[in-house]
Image (tube, rainbow, N blue to C red; front, side):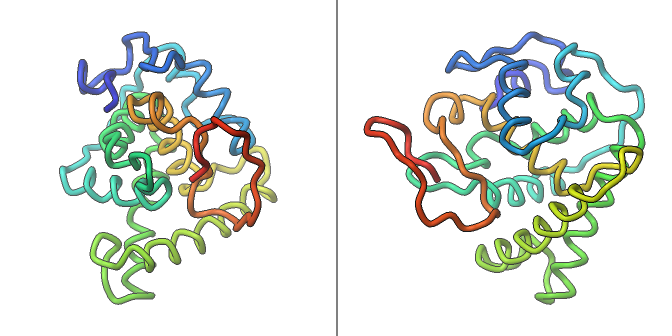
Amino acid sequence: MNKDINNNKNSSKTPFRGPGGINRKEAVQYISLLLGGTLVGANAFLTGCQTEDKQAFSKKDITYLDEIAETILPQTNTPGAKAAQIGLFMTVMVNDCYDEKEQLIFHNGMNTINDLSSKQFGKTFVKISPEQRNTLLVQIDNEQKKYMKNKKEDEPVHYFRMLKELTLLGYFTSEPGCTKAKRYMPVPGKYIGCVPYKKGEKAIV
């Protein structure tokens, strides 16, 4: 559970250190290394600044974002993204740390995923099966990786990159992420058949 959100649902000003000892700067550095590149809104997240322009999120939006996040970081032998309330974390981050243009990209991206789901499976994202969700997000993730690899410096970040960043950042600054799952390989992503493992380490999921 993201204690920043529980203590102050509309602000990220309070300095944060998760139960496992990871602070904001460490979390941003870790996710940047994991995904490659600078996180959207990282400066505002680190300094506690808030943007003035905010777009409203509904309870349905939070549920929808939870399901996207859970597909990226599903529950296995450790808690998944929903256990860390990542949907709520995303809404706070987008409103407090994204500028107006970035917020628009994020909201449009939410609509795009639903449109693609309806086109491919005849239902919106929350109504399709976990297998269908994974299939769809793998396709979108492949698209964003290609886009991010070739994008010019002045071009915006892909919306799914934003979703992955916020999912990982929220998870690794949450109680479940700090205490129960230190080593995560986010899904969707490329299949890696053999990953080095040392005795005593947290399982890679």
